[in-house]
Figure 1 (cartoon, rainbow, N blue to C red):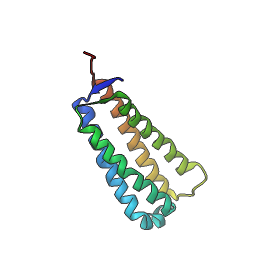
Figure 2: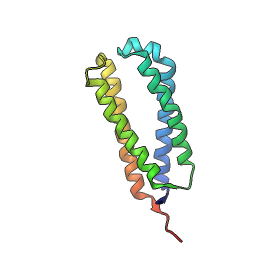
Figure 3: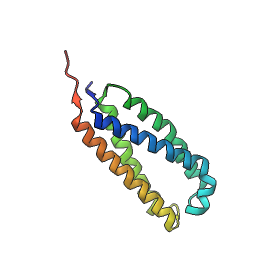
Figure 4: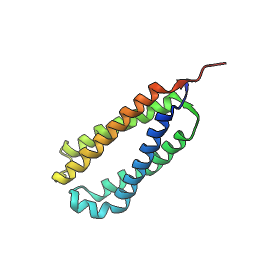
Length: 134
C-alpha cells in the first residue's frame, strides 16, 4: 500500500474541503424546504445531498489531521469530488429535474468550486512526499 505524508498545502485544501462541505451540508440539510422554492429543486434531493456531505466532511477532516495517509484515500477524495461535479451537471441540465435559473446557477457555482478543490487536491497530492518502505 502506498502511503504519503500530507504536504501543508494538501492538508489545508482537505480542511477547506471539509469546512465548505460541512457548511453546504448544513445549509442544504436544514434549509431544504426554503431552498426548494427558491431553486425549483426537490427538497428531498437537497436534504439528501446536504446530509450526505456531513459524514464526508468528517472524513475529510479526519484525513487532514493525519501525518500520513494511504495514497488511495486522497485519490478517492479527488475522484468523489469529480463525480460530484458530473452529477451536478446532470442535475442542472440532465432533464430529470427542472431547476430555475437561480437553481442552475447554484448548482454550477458549487460544481465549479468542487472542481477547483479537486484540482488543488491533485496539486497537493503531487506536492506530498511518498512514505518510503524501510
